[in-house]
Length: 415
Length: 115
Image (cartoon, rainbow over all chains, first blue to last red; front, side, top):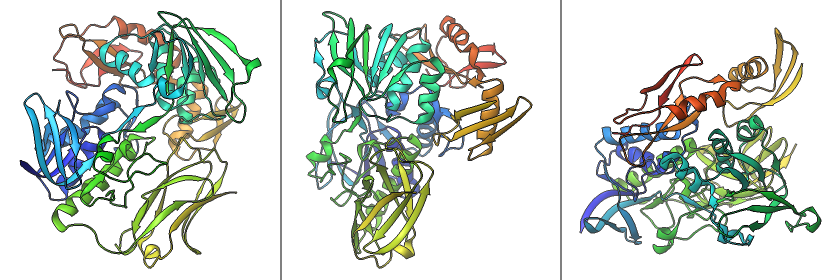
């Protein structure tokens, strides 16, 4: 069996940033395994701009952002194995992978899980009607158009107003398609406001809130969809049904962290994030196995994926050099208005500031977040607005954290 | 003029209000100077960066992604798209290579390397 200090599973933005951070922390025997033919992950098909403003201080397209990290990986001589699919990870850190040369078994000093996420499919959405060609998840359509040059349709309805759906509305319009409508089941969009402006409003594409696709029509190819408004329980209101002729339906209805390997290793998963339970170093409940990026929690910006991956890379390097971080930990918990808090466990005596990442349950106007341990306030933060589509970050100072005994709760109040 | 805008410069998406006359626009709601400039530009001459793809002629099923090196006038987006669609490229192409020159005062450049 081969041995490496750190094995990174996945060569997308998370995996690359984790590998670089681990290397820069002094552990140079790092390998990255990726199932695709080149690294970059989902960024390879995200040809639009808007990446890197926070992290790199300039605005890049997806391929350019990925290339910055690919170059850094190359510069360090970190070995990357493409077209290599990891089929298993064990709790004692044996990684099994497969490529055209055969089966590869690696005993790793530490493992970083960075497999990303996948899209919710039509099957998971339970849309009634026929099963014609022309129904795509938005990311699949994006790959067909941007990587393979294959235009998926001419008259389009998009279900779901997540960022990928919004980006694809503009992309399809650029390529000459007519986007008839974007329907969103919820009473608010899950996408960034700037994307609603520059992808829909710029082109006069209507966004229908509290609206869903009730039925798909067509035998061989999509011929149209029935859309309908939904009530507060998200049930279709019959009398609002109307037919829109179209040849394509794109689905942008949420992303699901791809955690088969994580579960296979017996790592406990948070039912809300659908990612592993981690501490502030992004170590899972199994020592030496770390997770970061969209496999841990679905991010809004790749810049924050890179940040998080660096924490995991540094954590993994520290584990290889010094073993597991010891010391007292407390749990974190979502309070009023907060859907989840990550990390779910925090070392209180590490002497380091800890950033808590969270998402709110619904759109709020001006709010104040309060981080408490029992009755002790550890941090507060105000925001002019908060929306479920945007990840919030609140930093707790190390001196506040020190001595915290009770679970840490983050809640919000509307101001 | 009294216009409400959402800033698209960064993901923060500030809600901007623009008031006043053409030569004396007052912007509020911006968290940074870029937002003020965006609001003024948006009310006087809105611009956008266009990103798309160009087929690589000497490779099978291979696209190179491209972008305008600077934002172009918003009303010319579809004209630029037509120019990009008509463009022809051959590998090898390095990211940053000029694919089309002189497009509304800027260039269309490759954003990906195809060897």
